[in-house]
Amino acid sequence: MEAPRFTQIATFMRTPLAQSLADVDIGLVGVPYDGALTNRPGARHGPREVRNHSSLMRKFNHVTRTNPYDLCRIADIGDVEFHQIFDIEGAHRDIENFYTLLAKAGVMPLSVGGDHSITLPIMRGITDEPLALIHVDAHTDTWDSFQGSKFHHGAPFLRAVEEKLIDPKKTIQIGIRGAQNTLESWSNSLEMGMRVVFIEEVFENGIGAIIDEARQLVGDTPVYLSFDIDALDPIYAPGTGTPEIAGMTTIQALSLIRGLRGLNYVGGDVVEVSPPFDLGGMTSMTAATVMYEILCNLSECVDSSKLA
Ligand SMILES: [Mn+2]
Image (cartoon, rainbow, N blue to C red; front, top):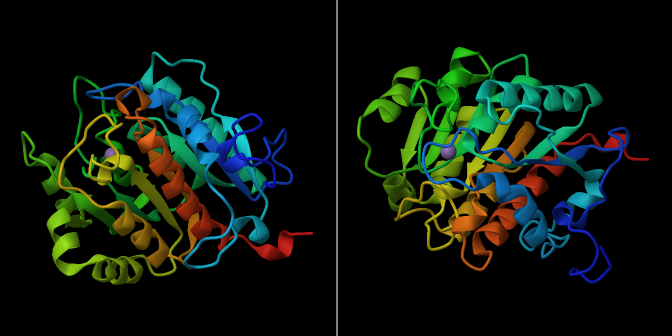
């Protein structure tokens, strides 16, 4: 990381591109799949652009003084390879198979999408037990079927409950907003027992109150952090498929993630970055910074005794 940041091939965070999983604690993964989108396309181009803009990231967190690269071995492990991109369930099997290999190798994944449907097969690959979930998003993504598919990007967390991949009572959804055509997604989350934090609550009670509640809800249960970039106000992140105004600020998002240090993380993702709708790369740069902040949290969960 001492080289000028604009040089060399763009890997996530300028980490080495690993040829094997043997010496990797945290794997940075691209999931360039957007075949499950319901509206504006382009998230398949997210990983490549976030890799490019993540070249701006550096080592030490200016608040926590964490240097994730001191704590564990972090590498870019490339993209999920797809063999059936025209079939959502087939593409999801490709994703699941990739993450099953990571789990077997003891590699914790931090992924960049791709549309939000990818989180379901990621969780299928990495867990046999219901996880706690911290889900930052404008939308609950607990809709049921749409246009004949159960696996579109608005449904992953309903399916994840059905498949016992997450415990709805240990799930908190933060930043929810935007008018809907039905009450289904909000009521589905609430009926399953999820904590749904609308954006007004974030602004009225402050990030600190949300952090306290999330920490209490999750406890020491293995937890996955899924960050949809549309949680942010589109003034910070216009390059996304389903923008909703009056969203979270970037400092609220980083403070939220930092406030969630020390939980028992098993992985995380940043999804729904759509470069064709972006302006000057600002969404990809913001996503890369969110990714770095999540990386700091994950790095503190790796067993450092593994380091040589
Ligand atoms: Mn989402």
